[in-house]
Amino acid sequence: MEQLLASSMNVENVCQLFKFANTFNCERLKEICLLFVEENKAEVISTPGFEALDKDEMLKVIRVNINQKKGGKNAALAKMLIGL
Image 1 (cartoon, one colour):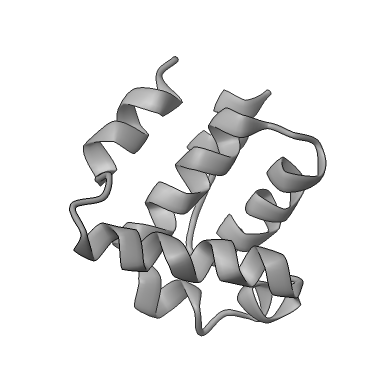
Image 2: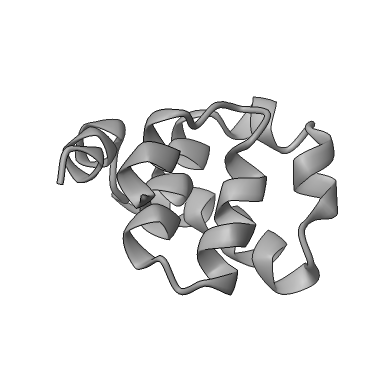
């Protein structure tokens, strides 16, 4: 199920998928969402889905971008995770 959701991920639905993954403890999907946000930050934070996140979820999404500057993960890892 996580793989199917991840394969349909886009800028408009990534926050909803992250919220779902967070609620149902789908760790792989959550990681893929955060990696996707890393690569598409500017677009993601301007979506209604981002505004619908609760405070803790927003912090997780924002922090992933701080970690990216410190040598965080990349899109290649996200693609690998989707294939698992």
